[in-house]
Amino acid sequence: MNIHRVNQATPGASLGIASVTSWRGKLRAVFLRSEAIRGYTLLSPTLVVMMFGMCAPFAIMVAVSFWTQHAFDFDTTFTLGRYQDVIDKPIYMALMLRSLAISGACTVVTVLLAYPMAYYVAFHVHRHKLIWIILMTLPFWTSYLLRVFAWKVILGFNGVINSGLKGLGLIEQPLEFLLYSPTAVVITLAHAWAAFAILPIYVSLEKIDRSLLEAATDLGDGPVKRFLGVTLPLSLPGIIAATLLIFIPTVGDYVTPALVGGPSGIMLANNIQAQFGKVNDWPMGAALAMAMMITVAVISVVYIWVTRKAAGRIV
Amino acid sequence: MGDAQGGGANRMREVSYIERSNRPLHVYALMYLAFLYIPVLFLPLFSFNDAVYAAFPLKGFTTKWYEQMLASEPMFAALTNSIKVGATTALLATVLGIFGAKAVTRYRMPGKQPVVFVIMLPLVIPGIILGVALLILVTRLGINLSLYTVTLGHILISVPFAMATLIPRFEGFDKSMEEASADLGANAWSTFWRVTLPMVFPGVLASYLLCFTISFDEFIMAFFLAGTDPTLPIFIWGQLRFPLLLPRVLALGACILAVSFVLVFIAQWLARPGAIRSLDSRP
Image (cartoon, rainbow over all chains, first blue to last red; front, side, top):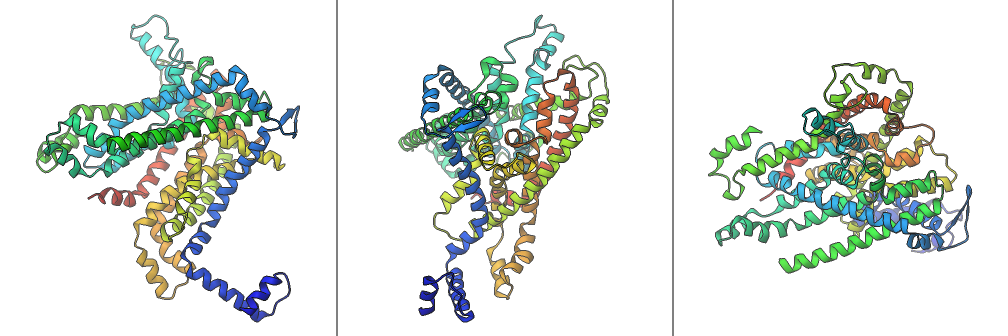
């Protein structure tokens, strides 16, 4: 006790060897006794890297969003001017709304397309299930850029669809609406993010206790009623996770709009990228990024809250 | 594929009637797989086509795009950069993932959930936001953009995947093995080297391969954080502006896809026992 107090009082002072070892011994004892401390010590390298890697960039981005760009330097006087611009200049609001609309549409399309697939693997595949899961997720791991590029090749003016249809004599002129439109962006994103929808929905379907379904059938529910009354509500957590896992990242996508979107498919992220590139207004870019993050966070929280409420009413 | 319906008739009685085979759903599933794979397969198809434009009808078979691609010096420079970044990212992210996965699975810790949430956060943050935020940070700190800054960005987005791959592996083996080793007098370090690591090694290898693939294919972070040395996706992005170079990009893309598919398939296969266990664990 005494030694301990001395150490606390003069941490930097020269100490006797004995006191150091007993101080260490005490620390070691506390360390070994507490599972939480040992756990956090083991976790600390990962946690420190991730915390620093996430917090420091965000802190400085928030700071920059309150500054002003002067040629190649910043005026660090605090100003809300950039946020004022986000609200006042119609271009930013329009881009924000379009981004939300496109990724909203893409989220709905992806989840609707993926649900039957996940359902099939969860309920109707009995052998080689792992192969199916690997097959469904494999494309996700391959280059995002190349997958988007593949759609450019398919939807292009002289692309696979147009040249194919022309070759078959079905069309005279290439279909121009295919490439460089919001539709092209939605199709490409629905393809690119498929795995993010399939996996969470599959996991939630796989977890459903099969006896509940049998009970519903025994009590006279037909397949449709059974699905709406049991399967769908129980897979809701998977649907919610899938929706968020797709909606949040796609709002910020700029590769797909840049490659297949054309002028009418440009999204907010393309503008943010330009602010850090040729426009060279970093505070504006930072403010737009913040605005995007806050909007997405608010939408996600409201969405979770509403679906929880709705689910609570059903179940 | 055939066994799904073929065995269906026989198994009809054993399998619950809820899970009986459903022909339209089966067709839908196959169409969905086609939707997932066919777009990607157009890249290799047109990379062997003897025409500058990727369009039907096919003109003839050629390997000249591959020859041109292999003769490109900048392509090899970018490839080397990507391999360096990928190998370093995968190593560091996997090591961090091992620390994280062991801590999360072996210790009861208050506040574990929010902590894991923070570590997994990069999964749901739009790439562009993390990218520009890191760009601002490194430039404010006066660090020059280089392959190191790209690696930093890639580690941040790879750690959640490393954790997600490793956690099931750590959960999958019996904790008593480690306890036995400790009881027999091994210290924490040798228990880890001689018991834990060999048991989780397939997961570690899977995590390494997945993180390597993520980094190797990653574009958005690299776009903001790369200096004058491009990684392979940045190089490809630059090439896309020139229509005449398209076939070469197709050839390069086909090679990258082939390598990614093989690496990821190996990784998923390595992570398999854990996956099977979690599938079989249902009541």
